[in-house]
Every structure is written in C-alpha cells, then in structure tokens.
Amino acid sequence: MAPYDSAATRTRLLDAAYAEFVERGLAGARVDRIAAAAAANKQAIYAYFGSKDALFDAVLAGRLRVLADLVPFRADDLPGYSGALFDRFADDPGLLRLVQWKTLERPEASEQELAAHLDKAGELAGAHGTTLEAAMDTLMIALAAAQAWHNTSPEIRNPAGDDEATRRARHRAAVVAAVDAATTALLRATT
Image 1 (tube, rainbow, N blue to C red):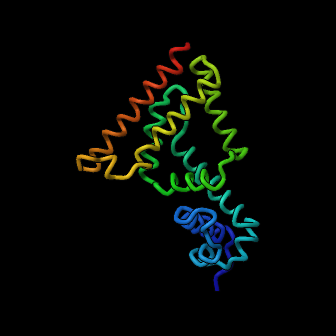
Image 2 (cartoon, one colour; image 1 turned 45 degrees about the horizontal axis):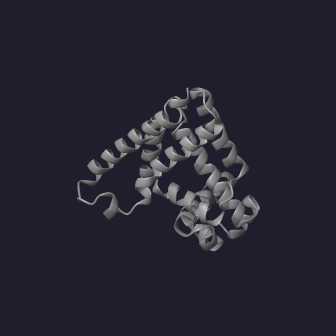
C-alpha cells in the first residue's frame, strides 16, 4: 500500500472543489461530491480547510493567484493587460464563472481582493499622475471590458454567425482599443 500523501490529497480537493464551485456556486456545492471527485473522504475537507466556506475561499484565492501570475499587471499598459485577461478568461471560462458566483453569493470584498485592487489602482495613479479615484474607475472599466465577451451569449456576441475564432479576435482588438480610449480619456488627460 502506498503511503498517504497529504499534499496530493489537498491538491485533489482543491481541483475537485474548483469544478464543483464553478458548476454550482458556494450554496449549491456539496462536500460529499467534492470528496468523491477528489477520491478523499469529506473529513479531509474539514481537516485541511475547516469548512466549505473556507474551501471556497482557498479555491478562489489560489485561482486568482494563478491568474495574477499568468497575467501580470502593468500600469503602463492597461490595454495590453485587458487583452491578456480576455485571453485567460477564454482559456479558463470556469475562472470567470467562479468569480461571478463569489460576486453573487459574497458581494463584499475580501481583504486580499481589496488590497489587490487598491495596489493596481495606486500603480495606475502613480504611473499616470492622477487620482486614486480616476485610476480605480479606469481599472474597473478595463476589468469589465475583459469580461464582457464571456458574459454575453454566443448569439448576441456573434450575430452574423462569423467564424468564432475570427469574431473573438476582432472583439479582443475592440477590448484593447476601448481600454486604450478609456485610459486616454480618464488617466492620460489628467497628466
């Protein structure tokens, strides 16, 4: 019999929980299904994470850390950052869905989430010589632009029925152009 690997069990639980939370949200997720999908017992969830809520927080924090590593923020290139976010959401649509569940079920910002947004807005304000408020407005617009395609049904986002990849590439270019325009209007105009 192979020795017990607690790190592997924890990783399997996080991966299974990600799939469960993406599909059903926090309220609809069941620890029995997560444990079964992870080939673990549900007591392991409580031993490693304490509660289903804490497991949700761990999944969200882990996925957002990965996103931050894969799409590094650049205050001097907000349009490029938005395009890169758009690409990551296309590559992992579950991540955006997880964030949507979090917004629906827990609209308050965590300390980590608040700090991340304030840090980015602070970098933007410093790079563009503007106020924190103007930088936060611009950041929120950039984040919304990166998500818009993924939050819109295919029939609406591609009304002419064009090749999906071609249409998506055109929309990505529109995201980058829109964020560039917002950056010019809201940040560069004040410098």
